[in-house]
Amino acid sequence: MLKRGFDIFFALTGLLLAGWAIVLFFLLATLDTRKNGIFKQKRIGQYGRPFIIYKLRSIASVSPEGKWTITRLGRFMRDYKIDELPQFINILKGDMSAVGPRPDIPGYYDTLVGDDRLVLQLKPGLTGPSNLKYWNEEYDLAAQPNPLRYNDEVLFPDKVRINLCYFKKQSFWLDLKIIFYTITGKRFADDAFYC
Image (cartoon, rainbow, N blue to C red; front, top):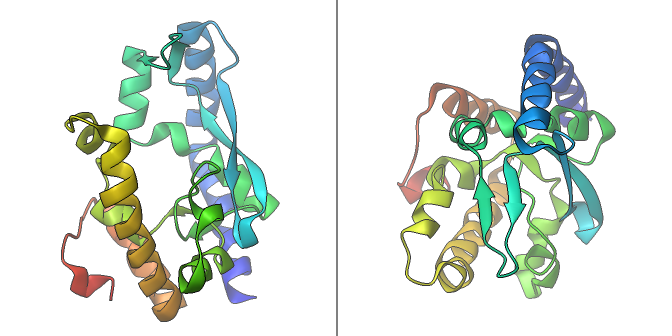
């Protein structure tokens, strides 16, 4: 109950402080991509239930081979996580929390087995413990010869491990610590923080 109350307070505060930025970047993204400035995508939520996530559009087009064309504005929004701001609405709706595992597309969290499925008891978060470790994940993946394989064999299993540690240790104070470190830009590669 405390977590949900905090989530509502956090999302309303975020919308009050960043509402102007969401509107501004929505308009800029609409002009920049010539499409609706809000991007919607199915993600896996708590208990494995799908939900629609909201982001500011950063991709102008996708090639037949599935390669994205990220605009210059889109790159700026991604680098500073501005594209994630509409997720305050997901938090208000109850699909997400301020802190939790970052929501992934179908085919990952929903396929977990055994104790790993405990992660699905958590609501996905706007930020989370694996965010602090993999803040520049997009660039890490781009540097790999086979990004999909690296994600599936290295990044995703480590994120599951980190999120299981969070599941076992979760508390209001840990959430505040993760939010503070997210805002201040502090990153952790030290597993002692997570477990």
